[in-house]
Length: 462
Ligand code: UDX
Ligand code: UDX
Image (cartoon, rainbow, N blue to C red; front, side):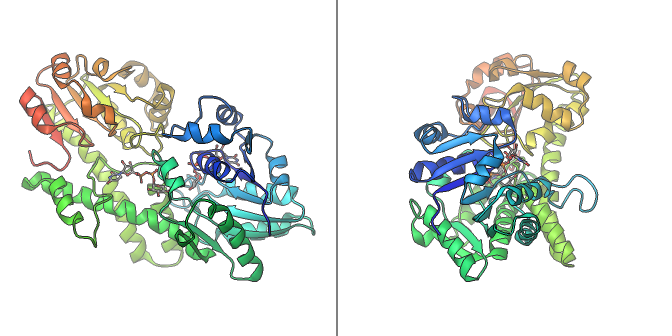
């Protein structure tokens, strides 16, 4: 089957950049990204993209208007496409059965119903959203029950492994592309059609094909393993603080064992982002559904440890500031869940700031990319009343403004610009004693001590 036109439902952090890369690499393909959110589509069509990713502007500019289009006309986009990526959100279910663990598949389901309604002829449907194992069967059932007799479908799984902040590099040069399909002649043909698209820029040996369920499960397991490494090193960070060992030295020592490897061993205030916690909880729910409580409990601990690490950091701040932060100004540097993104979903900063506000602290938050409205909304959604936000929250325009008159400063995101802060100036601007809580190890501990700060860095014996 020859694919000449593709569309993607969902113009988010995954759908937008992924389709931009496909369009840039495959000029012969028409690529349309459709989303029901008009503001998002307007932003994709403007000079200020809704997603901040280094290098993304150039990729979009190279293809937009040529073979890359952004639209809210979802129906026409589906009707014109030979291949449809589904990249709508799959949040953790907040209600009813499986609340707090299971994935809420209502957007995926409504996408399938819409595809069935407007399709004629043959289409390949590709799950891009991370979904529980066996969702492909549900999609197939919905398509079969709702489509005209002339429409036929093949459903593939093609999870996306890009990380935010490095999305363009990850898309351009992926470790692997994973494609799962049914092991039938029609299934194999659909898999080959998708392989052919990626093969325009990804070496064939890096394109893995598997059965549908292996592909769906691999995405959850990849994220679970990555998150597990962070919880493992964070658990050791607490032991390092207690013993005087240095977690970075321990990480280096174990990471040089080629069987362990050096990546994803950076101790922190915890992992954030839209995927790790959601996918771990999904995995836990899946294990419970298949009556594997021991396996479920094993993975649940990765999430528990992450929550504990965030709380531990807040406790450290409160204890250090003589057991009260009531009325004290605390400068917060960084709110995004990692550097080089404006995304704050599940950012540990939300948890830390929420708990400090509950202790009646005065926060002055600075982040170079996150817009002030997002910070306010995240804290309101975390349960902080509007009147507290009005009186106890200031959004600062630079780190020095945040530090002025502050008792303490905490780094919550590892933005590169924090590594070159004018520390003597910060020290002068702060009240004394000046406390620094370095949740991302971006500030030089020796310099902090020499300048007279009282520093705390995750995993460093004090
Ligand atoms: C999404 C999934 O949440 C994730 O599981 C998967 O791994 C990749 O795709 P992301 O792109 O980061 O992640 O989500 P988000 O930025 O929220 O984008 C989803 C988009 O879909 C939104 O723009 C939303 O408006 C759109 N959408 C959602 C629709 O167009 N139609 C719907 O019915 C639902
Ligand atoms: C992750 C996966 O890496 C990606 O493959 C998948 O498609 C989506 O989920 P993302 O959440 O965008 O990507 O970013 P990632 O770089 O994995 O970071 C996740 C969180 O872990 C961040 O909060 C980061 O600060 C934290 N982290 C990462 C650590 O605390 N220590 C580390 O060593 C690495």
